[in-house]
Length: 327
Image (tube, rainbow, N blue to C red):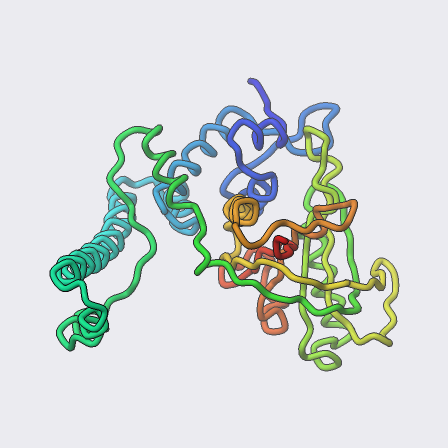
């Protein structure tokens, strides 16, 4: 049976190794060890399952429901999941159809009355305001697609971020305690060490405004992922000293674009990177030779979440890219 390395799978399916590791972390897929290989390889069955996961994600099925589908393959339960998602899409489609009709009505009435004062009056129209007030402005407009090619095109279109979804924030300079792990599961190992550090030092009492950042270090260039690492930073008081395996470092801070995801949606990194590459006002601003440490993830509300499992779905994460204004 042919085995594929994590690098080969990542390249073949255009999916990040971070996402693949998370899928394995929550038991959606499993890797195996090949003789003379210390790290991940995937067999044909796992690759086939990954194909199914990718299709379901493009159909906007949440990871929690995908996991249930694989754990309980009874057809009636799968139908219930799909029906639930169809109902949610119908609500979105209905809201967007209403918005479209109102906009068409406004355009029609504005075309009939070209004067500026008439335009302003329309925006105060009680009838329009009553209709618009209860609407949820849903962003997603999922069209019915038949083929895989059409699905890919629809997914690509829906995955483009708008300026409303991306925040421009300034991260302040800070002193941090760093923990760095390299190997098979550096995300989990570093998370466990960090949680132990916070609990033992009671850092939550010493610095209640603590912030937690993480990033790949390194991304890993070996096909089997053996040189992949993950580093985590937790902010500490300037005069605070730490002991090995932790190291004290300085974070320079700076301007970043931020996009919030629920735990596990690491495939959305591509969306933020594309936004930053194609924006008319901002551009990427990598300063470090090791650029991956500037592609950071901040665990939000970490002081209340640090005792949770690293894969807990209630965790929210900001994806962060350094930017600067274009000249």
